[in-house]
Image: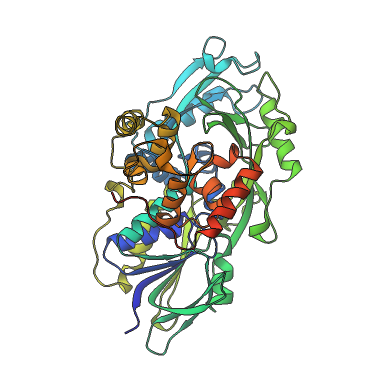
Length: 506
């Protein structure tokens, strides 16, 4: 008999994969389809932060900020390999927000979310502290506060991987074409393999529309349900430049237009700068960082840095579209970052659409989604994701160096930088990837900058990777170092691997 799933989820971003993981862990049968690669849309184009959103306090979004502040330490606890604490330095800029207002905001930021492990805010003398050295001498006082950084695309992949390990079916490169009500009281979701154009029908009692920038289109054009909520597409662009300074702190720079710009140490050798906020019209899959945005970011940080950043310094830029809930705010920067659900039950068949949201609050969003759907689901388990590690995250927070040491004991042939990269990506699962390798030759072909055949095969067999782009930009950020020729060679090799082979048994 053809399977009827409890939930069919459309969208393989952080919200869709988070909902799939949570539901599968409660014992529900789950199907998820994603038209491209996992995290190939909004979820991989973020500022790479797990943060409360300090600037949202100005817009009185206290519920959202509190939830996000609490989630920082929850997520750090379940994914200490891909999430790390970061200290941010906020210099006081004469003529912008007064120092007392900054300190008040940071006091609220410290106490609103029940901070436990992350250190509190402190005031800095920028003429004495190392954090002042890269800045212009006019900046005398700053405030140092805590947030976290994250490998956003890997967060999505690990949620999908955990969902599969708990029984979910995840189909990438599979587009939802049409959703209609079946005669026997279930949704019939028609999906198409984007490579072969083969179509099949998935049957489910509930549809979850987590299509991100396409959420409204999916609801109205493919499911035939009139949308009450609407999506506001906001473009956010980032640039990456060679590392700007030697210390490990990040910066939050105020801008005269009311925005803030983050300057964050990135992938050891680089600095990440972002983001912009501008309304976007057009195909979300074709969004690109414009020269105007790149110049804006360079000019904004150059107001603070002793050595200006030029557009010629940029080694990589990226841009994504945030699918915000349209609250009719006058400016893109003031539009709410909170999430909103639209639940429609046409003829007794529920479809839940997700508008908005932040990476930081994806786990709570998933819990709230299942709570909203509970009247239409058979009895399932209680919320569980906050205390259960994501794959590879079963070690103590702050334990990356210790886990790297243990990995080197078992694989002493690895250079330490290579071992640390594997731990920061795979955590305790790095040993699964390496298997029985006794020497560097056992890892197979070297594609450049520590990327080996064994790792690529692992990603293809276990983490849904199909192309070089999947590997070097979403499963890792090795594209920052690899040449175009090296990436092309990898892509050609992967295309020959029709049936990926798993690594040695573990």
